[in-house]
Length: 445
Image (cartoon, rainbow, N blue to C red; front, side):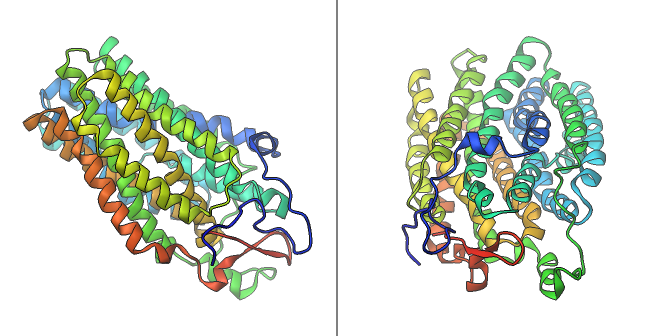
């Protein structure tokens, strides 16, 4: 398989002139798209507020970044463990059936965690409250991606919009990380230490219920047994576990490294802002970092790539590791903002390429689960990074905390380079359905 496949021509019928790569305008004109995009944006916004809200509240009540990082880490580990199960349940029973009880539990859990922290409860009590808080985080991002795959999978013309949809979702994710940390920091420092978490719980509840109400665009429920139309082969695909696909396991490890960047940056930037006596600059610095990610995501969706997603993933990860290698040595706000922007610019290509590969590697009936494995891996990497960076920042200052993103991305890059062959689908996985009785090749390299 060639390493340089023009994604604008992949899937074009032989003997025809391929159409130009669709753009954001055509994507957003997809019938029914706005009915899930707007509530989906509202429902995923709180996710960017949760970790920083926990760190700021627990550090305020305990006086320790280490303790704050561990509580946030428990939340992230809990999410990482439960997110794939939530995705599997959504594939089996429908998104609404999982989302409604999930957002209700999350609102209650966040409230309990806030009350315990303010009451000076022991650390173990915060751990207990952090477990359901993380487990109930709604997986709205993967659900939106699954809806895009469902609404775009009906024809060959629409299917060419899938890479654009992946880029658009990355931009949307990163826009939340521009707004979320700044909003949470402003609420925690300007209103009340618990205000960021309380706002996170309220937004999750309202946005999640609005998103769950959009039933028309919800992907069809994966059945255990094939219908007359799908036959035994369709039934077999519906029973596939996303984690049984080797490429998904590799991507999960790769996304752990991306999570280490998010977690390490959140804690270390907070510690850096405290060290210079200007806590409010934390939200600005993290917003610049996230803005770089968002800008790169916009560019990724607008470019007609000739290299396939696997090569783009490797290239983006090399750049991310190199950019993260200088964070620990920077000690001024302008330089840290500039380097943070550069780090952010390399995250989006890696994220978008990974999510795009899922379309070729995983059967439709397991994609929500696959997306949640990647989301969970980011959360797990973030959790570990928050805990380690918090301990390092307590003991040696913010500069030591910035070593965490470097180590995390370097280890993930090494794994990616060694196991990159597993990101190529088997021969049977190189075709994707494009309507009844019609199949077209999917290029992934």
